[in-house]
Every structure is written in structure tokens, then in C-alpha cells.
Length: 191
Length: 128
Image (cartoon, rainbow over all chains, first blue to last red; front, side, top):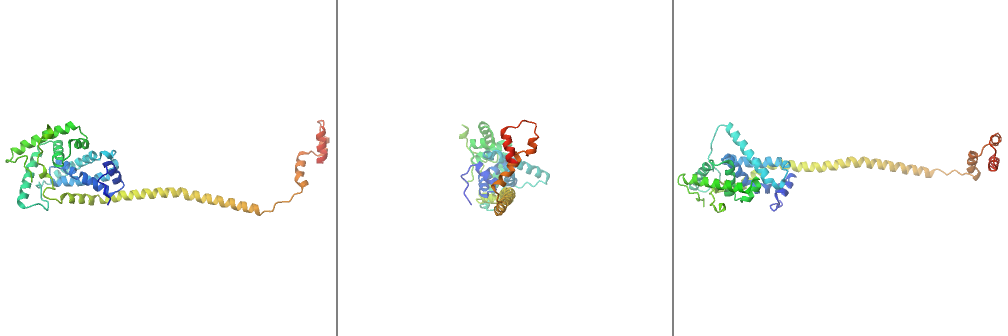
């Protein structure tokens, strides 16, 4: 398999359009985590975020010819992710609610660590639920995925100042919520 | 400055935290799901090339056949022409039709109402 990690989004989209597996795999690696974050910001649930992100990749591949600006693949793709995640929520609401908590993945560390992680996730999820969707999306992309302001602005096609503003208010609100919630310190990390 | 704000510890929400193989499985799962769509795209690309070649051959083959038939006809015609013996004509036979076409018979000439000139008389006599 050829290494296409150095190629631009536009080049990768061009190759993926002709069925190049390596090019599409690079796009999945490049935007998989961001897709998950965006889907999570919509659904608030790990399973739905995972399904939404995965489905979005397949849908994007099927509709790749509709991507009129391949160099701006990220913005186009994350819109698909958002829409798929919203569809999932609608479908979920039609079904019986089964609010599964986070973290039933295999390969987790010991039980204490697992409980700690699940608890922290629960608190974070509750706190994120207090934010607007766009604030969740921005704070997840920045603080979880490590995207820069400029990258988020370009890829979400929003002004950089707006991104900074959303990030500022999202962080402030999260700190407030987490500091009043069972003594969890915002800076606490899973070292 | 906002950039100096401490990050909110959202790593716990990253499914890869504590599960190092998560993103690899995620990637594999997406690629498995995308397999049929990628195969369709590759197939569509091959079909397109094949269609282009087919369209090209649809034009080229009949034109080639027609050109070959025309060439064969020309060659056969030329060969049959070259096999036919040239008729041998004497100089008088060769010139006679010309004189006959141009010269009027002497009786017609004699009954003509226009006054004869010298050349016309000579011509009529020679032709007769």
C-alpha cells in the first residue's frame, strides 16, 4: 500500500474518487478522531458518536463526487458527520431509550481505573450537555483532538474570532460545572 | 489571553484513552464498511476506460473496413485496366473523327447561304 499521508486533502479526495484505498484510509486516519468528536458533540453518547462517525465516512465516500471543493474536504465532511449524528438521535428517540454509559470497550486498564474513567466521563458528559452544540464541537476539537484555532476555523468555515469566543465560553462553563460537581478539579487528568 | 487558558481535561472522553487499540479498530471498521463503495469506484473507473476504448473501436473498425474495401476496389480496378490491351490505331483512324466532327460535308457546304472563305473551302475539301 502506498504512503499517501503527505498528500493534501484535495489530492486524497481525487484519488479516493477513483477508488484508491490508501488515499481513503489516509482521510480516515486524518479525520477519524475529529469525526468522532463532532458526532459526540451532537449525540453525547460514545456508541452513537462511533456509529455516526463511521457511517459518515461511508456516506462521504459514496457522495465524494458532490464535494465541489476537495481542498475543503474537512468542512464538507464534518457537515455530513453532524447530519448523520442528528439522524442517529432522531432514530434513537423513536426507539426505547437505553442510556448506556460510556466505556464498555475491551482492553481497558484495571477495574479501579475503569470505574474512575467511567465516572469522569459521566461528569464530563453531563457538563458538556450544558453547552450549545457548537461550543461542544469547538471545545472537543480543540481540547480533545488538539486542533488549533486556525484549523477549526478553516475546517468548520467559521471566523477565527468566533471559534475563540466559543472556546472561551465553553471552557469557562465547563470549569464552573466541573468544579461544583463532586469536587472534581478541571485540571484533573488521567495520568 | 484566551490561548493561555488551561485546557479542560477532555481526554477521558477520548475512547482511545486506556484502550490503545481503539482507533486502530475504528479505522479498520470504517475501511471494512467502505470496501464495497471503494470497489464500485474502482470498477466504475475501469468501465469508463473500457467504454472509451469500445467507443473508439466502434468508430475505427468500420472506417478501417471501408477504407480497406475501397483500397481493394481501386487495386483490382487498376490491375484489370493494366491487363486490357491498348487498341492500336493508325494515324488516319486517330485523326479521322476530328476531321469528321469539324468538317461539314461538301453538299452541305455547297448549299450554305453564307459566303465561303478560303479556309472553309479548303477544310471542306480535305474533310470530304
